[in-house]
Length: 276
Image (cartoon, rainbow, N blue to C red; front, side, top):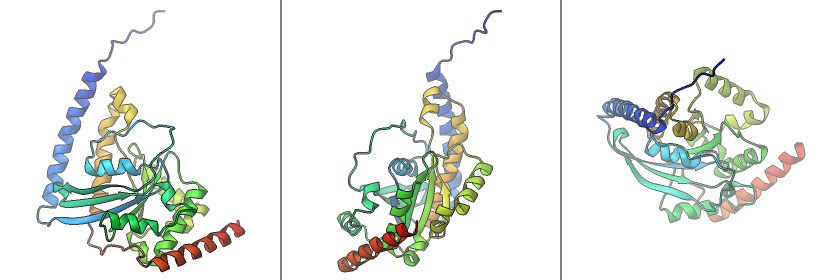
């Protein structure tokens, strides 16, 4: 019995066709989005991204700038970034937004870092407050106990009640998830014993995000079309949340208070660990 012989696929040609279709969809979506913001004025918004290494923070920044961005290939290399990174004065004319995005490394919110140093970074960038503070986790890697404790410490440092209206969680690498899968993920997270105690801290909700998959792009997989529509809608919803009229959250400014809160935070986690 002879094997089935399939004609060779020209990956580049197929990828170009997919890219052309994505460009058409993008143009149509942008026209509708521009119409919805036509009567609105241009606003400035500052966003702070925090979360574990490889949680999709940098990819999220790229997609907010351009939803056609293709995610980089996943790597096992350690992240050598040590300080905050930023994208300033990003103009999104369709959404009538100017964004300033600051990304903190995992190390900058861990249990050994002096959180008041974050104030210095914000002052260096001349950013006085944030309209949204987004904690990112990847669907692929989830959130471990250390990251959870770092987040709790960071929220405690900010002041939970004061920061809650600005805090949200973003679950990344969800470009291929459908409604049923997203609902299941939310239900699992909100009812998980470990996660439940922090889920109530996210006054701005829990959201999904993603980017065009690197491997699918290399293979010119037609799934990219559906991925792009999903990614665009994630981005649209997040930008609308960011655009919401809310007073910016200001980091604890008093240096002595910052040190005091850090000390209280260490005591809090000592008690927490004794209970485990």
